[in-house]
Length: 313
Image 1 (cartoon, rainbow, N blue to C red):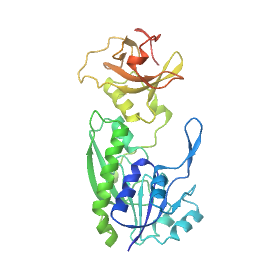
Image 2: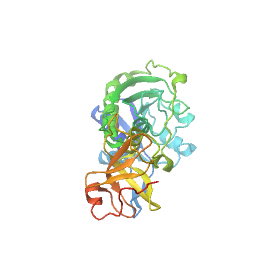
Image 3: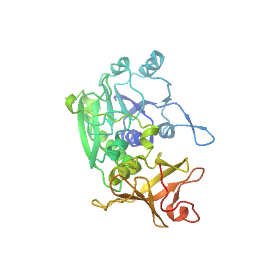
Image 4: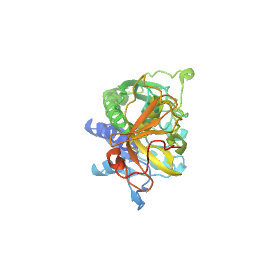
């Protein structure tokens, strides 16, 4: 039976590991990122993939840097015929790509060559895409540049956040991997080179990506916030303090002009906080004042000092 090493870290990758297990593959090791501090108390926490691997009594490797020769040597000692990765979080060194006879394949969360990089799911929503998908690809030295084995499209709706889209993509990735696995285990399959002229990039999100620019259109701000939720949310400033925005009501496609400077609060009620944008206005539905928990506006509106005419920045 062919020997497989699986490499992945977040919840997105767990379904791919489970798909391999359901296919009764010979998984000889699982590689994931080291345990990281989480929460306010900075408790050292294992990755979702590590938890899933230990549940199935699989050997787990957690190198700090996969590029270290010692890490490559340790992984190679398992003599994998195939390496499967899904959101592992590190670029594999060239020396590792040549270890398995059947190659290294990656389950990537976009329709390549679009959205290469670490945040394709979030940025597809932020950019207002209506579809995305999974690409199963052979890994190469560049960032998501390898030849494509198969793809599966996934619809993005206005109801999607990064959270719901991650779940949909995780399922699609597992289905695609399971479907293509039999031929991947037989030999290296014919794959399609990417068209470099169509390549776009989805770098990891920064704090600047989370800041709301009220001069943008209502639709753009709506897309930004749902692309950041439920992980970081968007934010603005109120009384010189961070005011986070977690949910915005879908704006009317051809809504009326707000008639006020961008960032001006037009109305505060138990239904919504309405804020003027560069084009139209948005209705905030879930917010988080500095030092408090996230809450629906029905709760926030009770006793708040925010009122019509307040300017957010």
